[in-house]
Length: 339
Ligand SMILES: Nc1ncnc2c1ncn2[C@@H]1O[C@H](COP(=O)(O)OP(=O)(O)OP(=O)(O)O)[C@@H](O)[C@H]1O
Image (cartoon, rainbow, N blue to C red):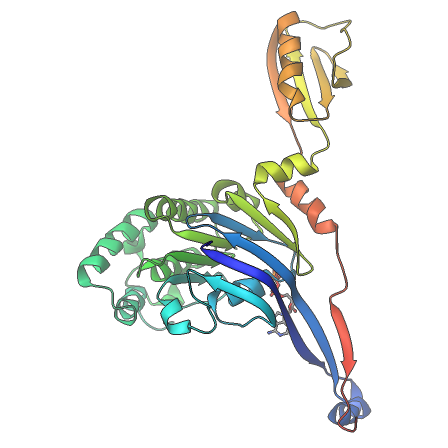
């Protein structure tokens, strides 16, 4: 049995569209205009313990909604979710002891208290022993430099300081699963790196399973061994970054700098010349597997001073996936009190 199982899960929201003007408002009273928004559509996937999953998708794709269902904050409209043997929204108290959650945009810290007081409160809430608390605090200090601002009230912390404190609060009880919703949004490069190192260390040492939503490609490259891409509430891709690249990259470029200009090249199997400039020639190769063969042939026949291989970068590949399969996700229903 997988650690997390999501089986054909859908979530829809019913939202009333306010009508404009006095007549519109009166009409809304008798015939409210209700829109059904399908945020998640028949999503299925499973996650093994210790995986770090990047849950990606364009704005409004349904990522946060799925994270909320996985955390037990929301229940699905249909389908089944099981996480670490629990149905999250049914067994919230028991389940909350096994998860850590960081929503980049929302705080779980007490705004007016010194930051360290929030950690002490969580120590009591999660019944963490004093020995474990001290040990974790030392580890947080080492990885996240919390001591620099531990006694500052939360409202006075910078975003980067607060996010480090949020992460410490989420991990204090050593949860088996960590849900991160855009944890590095708006942070500088140094803090982003600290947070990424922290996540990697906990995952490596304690086999913590991590589900992460992010719009930051470096988060994906550094952290995730698997990517799930959601588009308009539907699953568009499930696999590794390498598999994604192989699926979407049509060709790779090999830019070879020869020791001296080459007038004539014998035709190379699988490669075409895209451009020449001085001692440099750029070859286009269709399949990743052919790259090594082409390079071998060139270096065996010519003196070469440099070789660069370029493929499409992950950001543009993900953009391609986002651009496909867009669909209308709103069904309008007019409810009448008289019908
Ligand atoms: N509580 C709610 N009530 C009504 N509609 C909602 C609610 N929560 C989300 N939605 C709608 O569901 C869809 C998916 O929203 P969601 O927040 O899950 O997207 P997201 O992928 O996390 O987007 P972003 O990257 O912008 O955070 C959107 O159309 C959103 O307006």
